[in-house]
Image 1 (cartoon, rainbow, N blue to C red):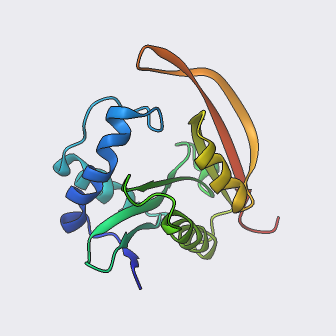
Image 2: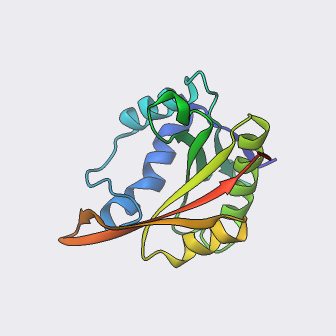
Length: 169
């Protein structure tokens, strides 16, 4: 199967390379400075070391190259939020529109549900029609619109939040 758990030591460079153009060229992330492979490895290790067992997965193509990744992470630090998770998904810019994102997201949501998380949140910089469509394809509904909550490339950016309940109440 081309989807597997991340290996922080061996996958960090590929993940940093996938992430880099989103930092440099888009509002998809509010990150503004490049992230080195070493820093990315630390971030991955921090997520997977969490006692809440957040999933962090990668998609490998037929040549064994990591072309996408997805993970769940802490939404807020207060303990009562522990069953709510923020989702993230990034694909190599040359691999978008081929269904890889849907495969990764489907697997991530399955792992989150199986892991006992109650709700998943997609936090989307706007506009981002592709991300909005992906979230809605998987049953997420828009629950929040934060006006001008980020500032990048000399302009204010809105953020929308999409939510999905993973478990029955």
